[in-house]
Length: 438
Image (tube, rainbow, N blue to C red; front, side, top):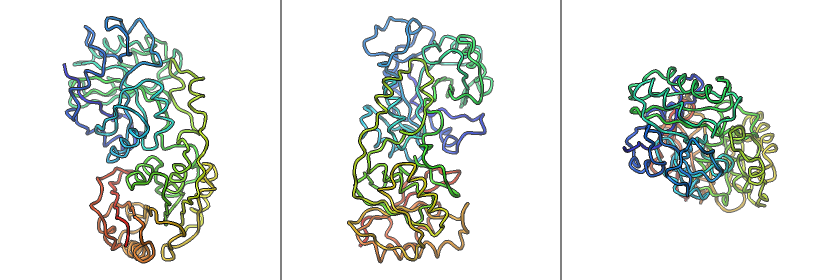
């Protein structure tokens, strides 16, 4: 039996889900790679349940007679904002996550718990990291109940710690997500005596797609854009994970200067400075995997030990005409430990000037008129931005984020074909880029 490819587990019965998770609900189960999933899981047991496979473990060994070890191999799913899968794949490959492959809504790879920890700590473009722990066919609720009870939950969860269970059902005979979540919650509570709470930090996520049930554990906890540094934000802030992916899409690798002339609370500039200094994005926050069974505090502490920050002569520059936003950006940079590599100024776009040094990247997320500003009055702002860049930034490349092709064209810049749509706070944005300006 062929198992479909990895799909992001989304939570259609939860009002708190994000917009990017909503978009993942439409991911198809017949995407490339369907035939390979069987090879990445242990052989199906007689009861139809597939479990992770540990290298070197005899196939005849029962998964219910052992605990999950740190060298366990299973599927890991890295969730990305729809439209930014390519950036996440490039980052995961660059970071040495072997076998990483792009799938709808993110990146899938095979690895162990050390890889889960490292992905949470080091990847800038992922919005969360899911550990796939079981997969089986479920044609009705009674079958789901029976097979969920056969998952050895003590391999993953600690008795007594609260757990939240969320479910989504697509094109399946089981169509009631709430009832499906209840069956899995009952199975967990029966084995471990674990309280079930929507407010629990540990989340078990069930997705049933074409009658295939996949169970994952969210190992991140809070979304990964919450680095722990940006406490001060203004209206319509750019998330750090999206900023990192957009910077990567513009070719930024930490060796170019970055200018953001509408910096808001400083996300692009701070993210660029962290990359240039080699700082790990998850260094200042906690993760849900610390509460899972088998977590090794000593091994995690060794992984968390900070590498020496890279000294950089680059200065990532941000400006904004809003003095309050500039103050926020400076405070956020201080908390992130990148004040020495950043500079923020109060300035209008009309006074934008080429900073000293070799050309780099101008990246800007102007108002779109959807939430901030009036679209009818924004064309002049875009024209002014384009004029300043065309006349004062020879050799620089430009990345501009907007929902409106007309506003992008109002700059008069020589745009390349725009990137794919990206879901951002309920809006569909695109990244527009130029080559080096002449």
